[in-house]
Length: 289
Image 1 (spheres, rainbow, N blue to C red):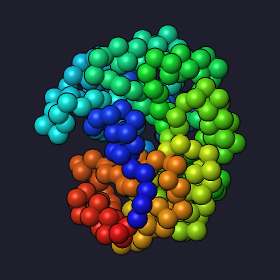
Image 2: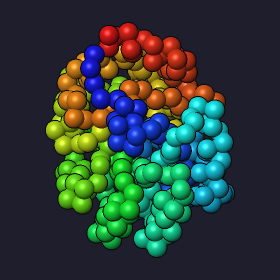
Image 3: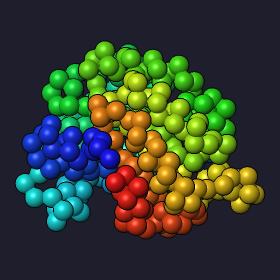
């Protein structure tokens, strides 16, 4: 099946292999610090979905160097994207954001920034900063939408309405920021029709999309519901079939940044098949042939 993968997009845009280095900028989240709530989204891990990021005990520059060493055997003569991954990476005073973003873009091997955040954490001053940096090196903003369906959004404690996402995306596009939208496949109460509606909706607006399998992770409130049999997880075949149908409706103009995802194995409760990433990708690719 013909689609635009992240690898092919980055190679065409930057002229070489580009690898993302996950960074922990030391931020928190309004859904954790009491502004909106204290428990975070129901599925979110204690690491704020940044288990594979560097350590916030080190500077941004140090994390970049550490990340490069971890992947140096996979990439030769390539470049890197600094991926601010853990928690909400625009949720801090602009002076702090400026310092950390500039540490990243001033590194000679960094060709772009990728910033994971919430649509409700993109105020006017943050947008001005992103506009400024985007004129120096490209900026990708990754928005954790997860679903367009308000009933599901309420259950997962997302904390903002779909209209907030729409507004954030429009504001980012006004300053020529490339937007990547995250969706979770297999959220409780959603069927394939619901999932495809979310995919179709965001693909009319977004520049890129990440499709993420729902994981049940230790220490999350979702784990409690799973243990009480309130939540069912997808089988590998079910997931692969849904991904196939998603890809069929994603236009080539929208870059597919991810077809699945893997939680930290030490925290994974279910589905256990997701721990074998090679097998998962092979199964998905067979469906897409």
